[in-house]
Length: 158
Image 1: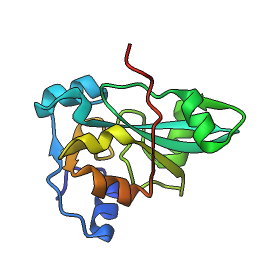
Image 2 (image 1 turned 180 degrees about the vertical axis):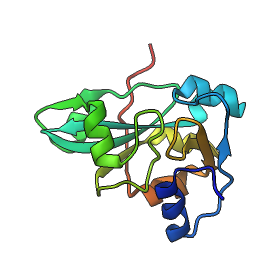
Image 3 (image 1 turned 60 degrees about the vertical axis):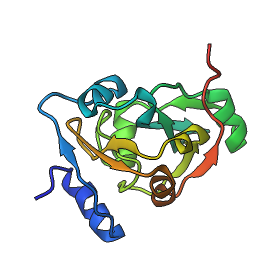
């Protein structure tokens, strides 16, 4: 039995993806917690963040060491306004709670952007549907299964 959230385990099976889902006793709700638990670089963690673009949900996949630049997301999508989604909308859109949102296997079909810097790594780690579970995958495969458009949407380094 997979430690992944049942909906996400089902999505993995439907896609024919075999990965080792790791469960940790302490939460991996934040990128920092996940990187510490896995023993990887913070930038190797994939954050699955939900925003609204003109009130329509959009998922942004971002490396754990970076922040999303909402102005770049707005321009990429040609939207008037981009804002962070609230917890209720995240759960309604994805079927998962904040801190456990995986990059695919969601309750609804949502537009997805993946920041180009994810491709800098051989392997990245993402949530497996719960705040205690993560899984590794090469970023190209992860982006493909998420149906994501690769874009430059991270804030410039300070």
